[in-house]
Length: 112
Image (cartoon, rainbow, N blue to C red):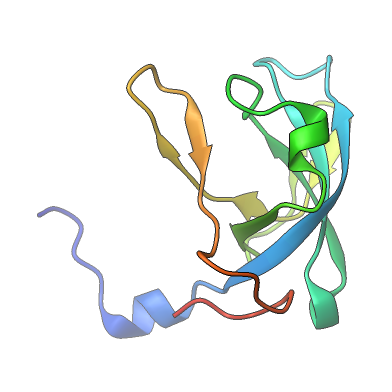
């Protein structure tokens, strides 16, 4: 294993559950992407750009719970400011498969 981190490194990463409440096309993105608005409960709403168009249609994403890192700095992606990093797994053709809780949980729930 490479890049072993300490427990203190891990706990610095704030990973939370949120619900996607709005999805918009993002034609200006370099790679096919959507603009997401995600509700993280007490943390409020955050925006994210996600390259998930291969497996997900806009209507399938509304009300879907996802897992995201919420304490990265904001990142400018073309004309869009991304405020969190939605997490996923790379599939066999490099498509992104979203990580999600097995059961419905409150928005803002901490992963750890």
